[in-house]
Length: 117
Image 1: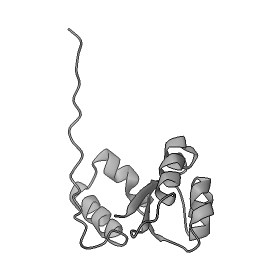
Image 2: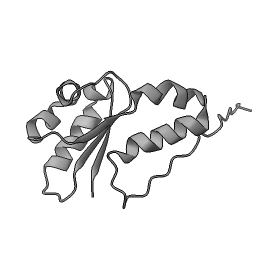
Image 3: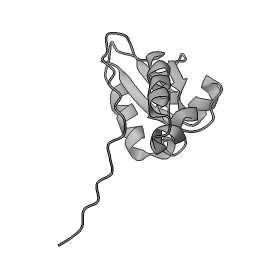
Image 4: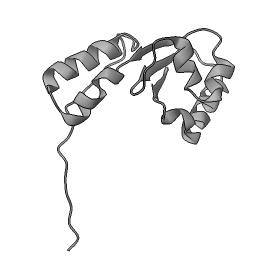
């Protein structure tokens, strides 16, 4: 089992992300930490590590597998160029997600608006 972390500058201050990391590191595991940066500008592991909750700095002695797909964020959220964007997302995530792990990316679901009656 792997720990897949969706990292961003906002998520770095998340108490939930800190709790999840502490829980993961509290037990011996055979899986790896895989980090996907979804927002922010991270060119090096040192840049990214500084933006993660302290549990990662404390417990990761070596650089984990990580990739940034932040450059695709706006297009993915807006649904622009969806076939090309989805292909680029799959290619980016394939750099860190093991081949044996199924990866399903679907186009964003249509927005539903509900009105009170």
